[in-house]
Length: 229
Image (tube, rainbow, N blue to C red; front, top):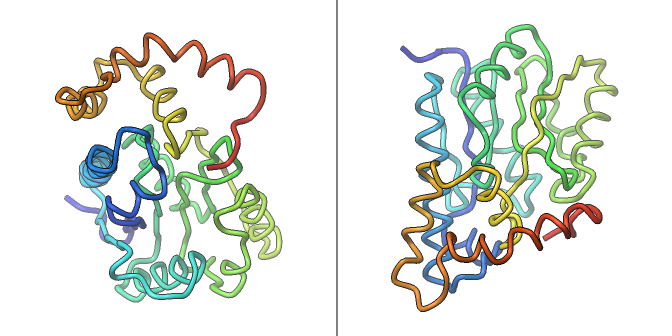
C-alpha cells in the first residue's frame, strides 16, 4: 500500500551523463554500466519504501541550470497533488528504506529534513508543500560545498524547524566509489553487481583493486576532506 500524500522525487541525469561527469575510471562503457546500476538500485530502494515514486531525468527537466531544473521538478510533483516530497539523487547508494521512512516521519511533523554529505552537499531533502518557497529555494548555492548551509539559511529565513538524518557520501569519482565499497563490503548485492561489470575487463576487478588501494584511500581521507569532484 502506497503512502498517498508523499512522493519520492528521483532527480538525476541519465547513466551516460552521470558517467561523463563522475568518471569512475574504468572506461566509458563500464562507467556507464556502473552509473546505470546505481540508478537501478535507487529505483528499487524507492519502490521498497512503500512511497509513491516520481522520476525526473535530464531529458524531462526544464531550466537553464541545476537550481531551475530542481525547482521546476519539485513544482511539478506538488502540482500532482502531493503535500510532501522526499528528493534523492542516484549517487548515494548508502541511502536505505529506514532513512527514507525516518524522513517521512519527520515530514509528518512539519519538519524540513536534510541528509548531509561530507563535501557540503546533501543526499536527501524532505520538504512539505506548506514550506515551499521556490524563489528562496532557487537562491540556494546548488552544486557547491555550501548547499547544506544554504538549506539551513532557507529554514532560518522562513522560520522552519530543520532536522538532519545520517551523513552519507556521494559517489563522485573512483576514490569515493572505492571508499564506499570498502565500507560496505562484498556481501552487498550492489557491490557484487558492480564488480561483475569488470570481470571481462583487462584491468582489475573491485576485489583486486580494493586490496591494493583502499589503505591509500583511507589514509588520504584521514589527512583532510576530499577535493570536490
